[in-house]
Image (cartoon, rainbow, N blue to C red; front, side, top):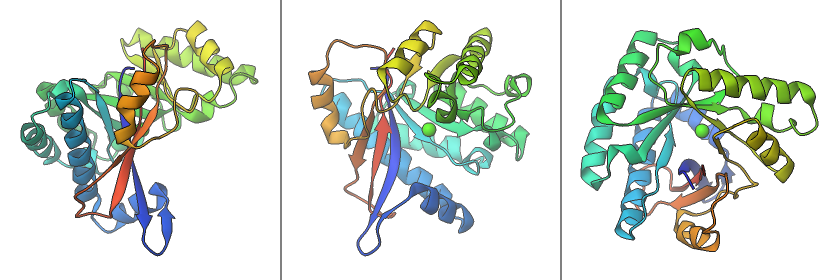
Length: 253
Ligand SMILES: [Ca+2]
């Protein structure tokens, strides 16, 4: 297992499950996204601390909004949280989408460079759905490329998708990036990705999102690691933000 991805969930007392697509968009519109991101980072690092206390190093990836990449105060806030929870920076990764780099590229680049200097790596999320200019992306310090699930979903049955995924893997490797496939849902797709030299996979074939508290059990149940990623859910005890859970995905090399 190479790590987990934290995913936010919000179960409203009256409205039930509210889609992250909805509450993240709402937080962006109302100027609360910075607080939501900090809440997610805090919950993820607190959980990472708990795992460290159990003797297990679990790298955790936290999704940033496009607006966070334009927030010059973010690296300082992340440094404070790493200090607060005494978590090594190498155990935290941030995921950003291509669109995050296009608003004010100079600011986004500076934010990522400062994170990199601290030892926090960045991954380019949902790759292939945006502008995908690798020449342009090369200017940004990212370590990992996550191929969007829309290309992975049908690659076992669609030759065109297989070609796209294969060339994206080759392109990523030529830029010394770690390539991750998102949304791997069956063994056939996993085999194809292995043949294509994909570094890491994530999706239901590995594990469905689960509460963070279930992760140690999951690791114990499948000690023999095969290439994969899984998902976990972290329930937050202290919530100044929507009471919720964070769930994530584990990656295996
Ligand atoms: Ca992600």
